[in-house]
Structure formats: structure tokens, C-alpha cells
Image (cartoon, rainbow, N blue to C red; front, side, top):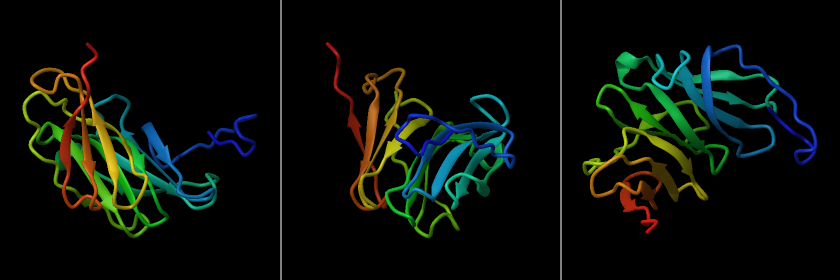
Length: 172
């Protein structure tokens, strides 16, 4: 959906290039947006997908897709701090671990980021990401057990060259 009047009204845009679910969208400008999700119709789909538009959502193009056999089941969050740089987070079914991919060329190529060891207790996927700059990002995950059972946050301050875990505060 899109709005051009601050949320006063909304219009649907259809993405015929993907059959499945879209989970998140990020727009570094009023015309350029990236959306992430999965092929298939459930949380653990048949492969992660990234779409882009350069015309404000009138048309969408598939810029990245992966089958489950490649280890990328789904993307859940995307953040694009500039026209050229975006980060997407999700779930890698091959290793049952979190996944971060990034582009620095407007989506032409996407590269895997190294996610540190999950420290036993970290949920199997990252749910969301926010990048206020091209070098600084914060990604969040659920956590079901272990020392980080309050959830966790991954941070980078070097454009994804390295990521560091931070434990979310306890709600006691």
C-alpha cells in the first residue's frame, strides 16, 4: 500500500512477480523502495525474496531470490539508509540461523554478512532491522531460552563488516 497525503488515504499496489508473503518495506526516496519476504505461503517458505521499485510502487522487480535449498528461507526486515545501501534480515534454514544480506549498489548484488555465533538462546531469525546511516544498523530478534532470553539486538557501526550482540533489557 502507498499514501501520498500523509496517510489520509491509501492505495494498493500489486506485486505479480512473487507468490507468497511480503514482510517489510523500506524506501530511501519517494520513488525507490525495497520489499522483502518469502516465496510460498507460510513463515518458512520456499525461499527468500527481495523486490524493488524505482517508480514509487507502480511496478516492482525481483532483484534477489533464493530457494530453501540455498539456505535462505525468508527475509523479515529491510532497511535502506541510502539509494545504494540496503540491509535485509531473515532466516537461513540450511543452518537454522539468522541471516543478514547487504547491497551497496542499489540492489544489483546482495552479499551475505557474517552473523556471530548465536550464544545459545537466540531465536532462529532476525525479525527487523533499522539503519539510520550506511554504516550503523540495529537488528532485533526473538530469543526463546538461555542467557539472552529477553531478546537481543545486533549492532554494526562499520557497514556490516562486523556485528555485535547486545542483550535487551529485562522487564523485571
